[in-house]
Image (cartoon, helix red, strand yellow):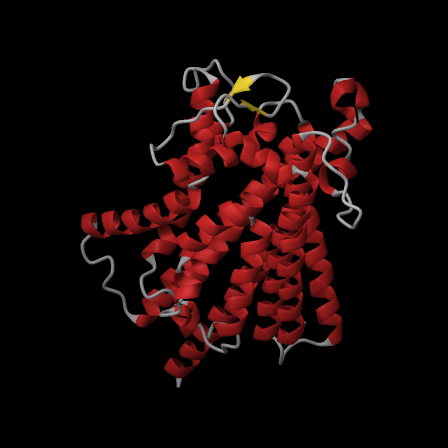
Amino acid sequence: MSMTISKAILLLSIAWAVYVLWIVPYQNGLLTAALDMQKPGTNLPGSKLVPARHHYTGVRVLDNQIKTMTGFFWPALDGSRADVSLVFLEIATQAMATWILVTIESLRVGNKGKWYINSVMIAGVLMQNLGYGLIVPLWLYLHLAASSTINTATAAPLISSNPLPLLTLPLSTILAFFLPNLLMSLSPPHRFCPDNSTKQLYVAICQFWPVLMSVSQFILPIAISATTPGINALSERDKKLKSLKYLRRSYIFAFASTTLSHFVAVGIPLLAYLFPTLFSPIYMRQLQLSNVFVPKSPLPPVQSISTFADGALTFMQWDLIIGSLAVLVWALTLAIQAQRTRLWAFEWLDGLLKAAALVCVSGPVGAAVVIIWERDEMVFGLDLAREEERKSR
């Protein structure tokens, strides 16, 4: 896949995302209904009358945005719509794994000084508020257009000048993403979630997980450096070896996370299809695979949403499809650029078949994680082999 084609696909993805994530929701009433969550005395959308919480930070503009986001995701969390809950699970973990890849790219030496690649926290805030399917393809396009890590024949641009942030990346993800999402998933009354107001607070905190992740990535390496003197005194070869070692851990963590969630998101509908007696008739239509992952056509004439949950479902489906496939296109592009002098035609076909199999196992971003991992292993391996060869002369 050439760079020109990949960039064109990403630009088309951005344009399509603007249409299906903003223009269509405006036309079908979803955005209006979401903004109505800001009004006093509003109930959250769902099968039960749950009063919306209206105070979070005391900053009106910020509180209004939090109320909108909390109301938008509520149908995925109140247990009333299995299809919305499953697609939410899928997009949440695909976005999390995407952010591990984005964070890794921001730490590479070859991307140093490129603020539009390194501003991970700002990009994360934009993603949470404007859409995964809009911001991620935009970031990926900027990366392909400007990064010096794409056509590298050596590992030098791919290493991190300080490998510690790579070491702490899985822990930062657990603290910033998994822990808040675990609390958010609790159903009141619970010891840690006594009422729906507390649950809404957890939902609000989850909207800031990219910020929390960046803060963790700032604090944890400093803490390790302070408690382990000399840990940063590394030669260039040691930086290379440490970078590869810690990259492997982050890739394993990201792939395992996407695989587990993908197994649940796809496995439950398959169980419902194979063993329908295991599930309540209320959920059978919701648990059809096509209903969970295939969005309604956004082409005119646009129909008004029948329920808020239906509109949120279609939004998240398009958000997932556009964002995750964009990551896969980007990963394939990087892998092909790294191997462009080594691949025969049958190897290209083999690589595409492998990518398709990985998508079935762990989703598009899970496949992208493995593809980038293999690219790194190849480049680092060749570089280390050349070093050994020079030493043996």
